[in-house]
Image (cartoon, rainbow over all chains, first blue to last red):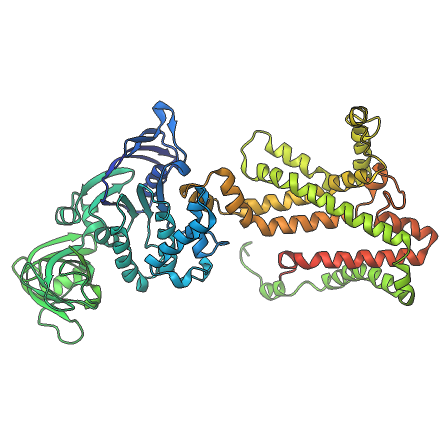
Length: 351
Length: 271
């Protein structure tokens, strides 16, 4: 279990946050660029000493300036998956995964055998002899994860694990990552600026703004009751819960049915849907959208040049549209409209 | 007209060099190439096989290769650590240290040789107590040649490796630390392998500089055939006595220099 009171003074930011990550828990530290997320992660990894506060992992104090305690990163048992993976370019995938074991004095043959087992488990047996620059983004990420896990850390830190990937591979890698993270027994702390990544991967969100925590809670809590306008914008993602009604079809708890582009990962699922991905119409849309449903406008909230429209009916969701659309569709509370979303915009993950 | 407004034709003029530069640039090329052409033109090609087997040539070539290789080895041993200190540490007075380490590059080698005499000569600051204690004598021995070579060549290695180490992304070292690697392991398995191209380039430069060393060697180690007479010294002596041997020696040095350029081509000859 990690307990951290992080206090770091940067030239333009004073980072102060309390953080707790239990064993088996996935916590996402979510916030905009410059909020101090990566600095917090570096402090926990031992790459940036604290200015004040205290970091404790499984009862062992790792950093406490007041007591003069500082455990260097190589003695912390904290694994890190870095943003750009940072695989050693002069070593093969196998040697990268074996690196940590070799550094801890494990014999060459044993280290390579253990690394090979990790690569097999990650579905990377084919690329064992490949250099990092020849790997795809998804492969590099799995190698980086295998490298961090091979030394069996007590805590795993992931810095923007999906940011280096293009949109196409991102969806698949995100699902893979969720599966591989589930197999790790210790605590996991994920740093990201992408609310969708945070919601899909984490059990609990910690929202960080300008060095301070502004809200914590489960993804459902935070998305349902954003504590500030900023959080609403940041995590204003619709979370829809339901059960499988077909290979790609979900029956929502609120009664609607949605079809996804890919097979469902489990029988009980949550679906994340961005407000921007919901289109509104006066009549039932025909043509490409696979998912269309009648809705009643519950609330209309104007935020500068965007308007958030809360919808009730078989799918409880918030859509984000332009002011022009509001006028055109006559969106006032009580109005009846049709909503639609493309199958590819629905992201499902096990509940 | 404001200063910022471009005059007509100026953009096109920038693409071509002003005409006055062309003959001057050609003159520079000619000046660099002509001596080599003259050397080749005077070469006694038919007798070359016999000439390069003469003792003055073989002795000098052997001594040059051995002493330049030894100087390169010594430079690697101490120069890489010094480069690391210059690139990474935050010691006070680091810029002074870097200036001192660079000094032999610009110092006239004869002055370097004289300074070596005052330090390591038989009456020198360190040389005298060293001889009293161990009987070891540096000047006018092969050790003196190696010392003179190292003195002038070491800075080339240090400067090259330092810039190479600065270019290494330190985030890889952090990644290695989070995997449990201590400082020594990080240096050995992450930093040095990534700096390897600059270490090779530095060693090659160092070797080339040591091979051509004249002033410091003749001042500190003298000019004894078979003991301290390296290739450049042999060329200088042979020019007076045996011009054909001097040309043969020069051709061997040109060939070695060209061979040294090959590993550097990626670094410096890339367009």
